Image 1 (cartoon, rainbow, N blue to C red):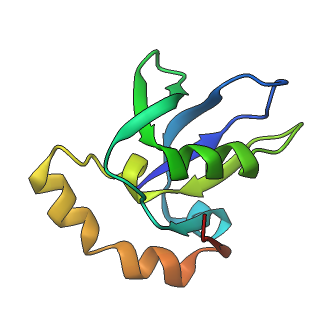
Image 2 (cartoon, rainbow, N blue to C red):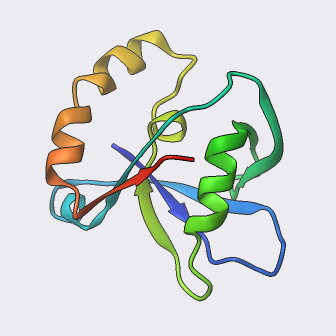
Length: 114
């Protein structure tokens, strides 16, 4: 599965992350993130992925990731809207089958109500 490495915050800088692959033994070390997607309108601020791609987020997810960033270390999260390619229906249908297992085996499940 893909995992978001949420990079440490730098003052008021935009949320920055790196997508990494998570295999076997490291699976239990990640935190699963559950939230309300919010309005389908994608707005600023943006999430900057270190691979030089920039993706837009819903306002609710953007606020959540800003609040969840640690100041001095990375945080590893599974966030469905980012970790599952929402534009690839084949991948999406395959990954949806893993969601229960991800939440079951995550070290922590973070619930964001907005």
